[in-house]
Length: 304
Picture 1 (tube, rainbow, N blue to C red):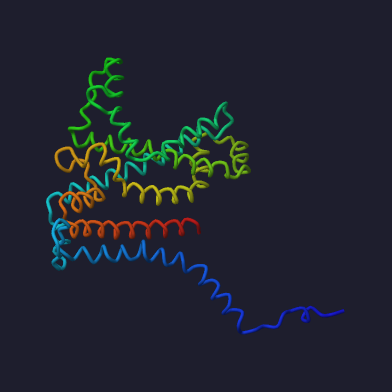
Picture 2 (spheres, one colour):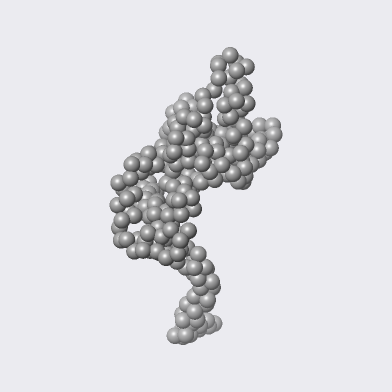
């Protein structure tokens, strides 16, 4: 009877290189596309940030760090950064809390639950511009839905969402949360359907109340999902442009709802200061990179 060693193929020095070459051949198209459409624009954006470049005129002048100094010293920078932080924190928290609440509500046997789930996810696939236009009819101070409901209930008139900066930012945040609800809802629902049933049974045997079960049993199981959503929703909310552009165009009162990503557009394509717009985009990239690295490390630490 032949031994096991007789069936082992002789090792050759060429096979690893063939495998490596095949690997490069398969990966090369993706790497080329990534370099052309991601890394090259990123490097070009950083390079542009060191120039005074007006896209309405020809030529660009190298000015070093002047754009960065201007951004850090401009009077409106504090307002714009504050708007960005407030909107992002409220949008992330609101989207995740609303998504988890809806997932808990629909993670049970209900009549027509599949229809409700599909309806809840539908807003996520709509464009931000379409959602913004629709919500203009909700928040309009004259004939909007909110004003009409408050009038019928005898609660007076709704605040003018388009003239007061804090209400305008609230309006933008609510609109974004509604649009993004379907995404967080679906992810949390999938996590709930994969939770451990033995822990649920143990909690029921111990007589744990709903709040105790939620804090001690359910939330720890949802921690990886929560970390994942916190990263993706944060990155997405920091890039919201279409809703702001449709509903407020960065106003009222100049910069009432202007965020950093909207400032990139405004400086580059309204004021034609492409170099300064690239500076704001570079600052945003650094902030996003730092936040992502911190969150990923926290996720790894939590997994251990």
